Picture (cartoon, rainbow, N blue to C red):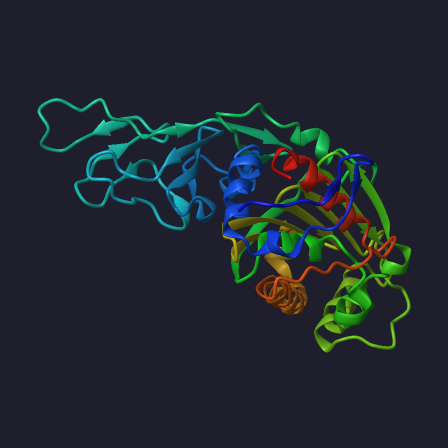
Length: 372
């Protein structure tokens, strides 16, 4: 039986989510219909396919579709041949045509079938194309069943002035992390800074969460923390290396911020650190499994001349990601056991460190209000 009562209908007061909402498959099915299908799906940045003929196979769509640059226009096309439904392209690269390896059916970069060997008449079968919208060169798949959400407005925060464009940046690499816990647990940990001092000694020596600032919009939020000038008493060797490279790259002057974390609900995130922009989006596969697809962008000069900076930054990012994974696993297991024992338990919000977590819970309960 579906139940998700977390809102007092008389006072409209919001609380945290009940533990079964993280482990109940029936709630996950409702989320797919009520939330997942409503919001545009992030596909990638224009920098994935910067030149004519460049393509990127999309893991977020299980490799069934590709982004392809056709004379500067970015198309979202099916990656499945119309003849015998074979997958065609892999990974990323550049090509003049999309060619199926099985029978050499050949499509143009606009998806139109141009050749079908040994057919007397060319079949009228082109690759399926899908509507997209570009916002700050970020590409989203439009929902065909729901009105378009104002993603641009969700990104227009005062703290993002002059840094939303990726000018002078290039895509360096993409990685995928797999997690065995509910998608909401990941977003919750991302949206609270209360654990940083206790669980992230390296990150805590890079940024100062004591001076955390928040901004909120209807379905997005942003966190900004300054660069920690004086070293904390606890740190990690990995972060110490990256911090020293940040200082060296800035001629020993402090950067204007330590980190800025933007979240657009339900699962899109952009992170700014000194000399790196990280774009990630969470893919909920099942009630207790999700994937995070992570794109790393750096200034072109760093990609060309300072691979050590990239290596140190990604090592630091991975250290924090592993720590966050441990936190999420502990939370998921605790909630699973509470649900198994038919117990309910939620704790208070810590303000201001968990203000983002509270905002996410309120958004989620509004979205799911017809099922509460």
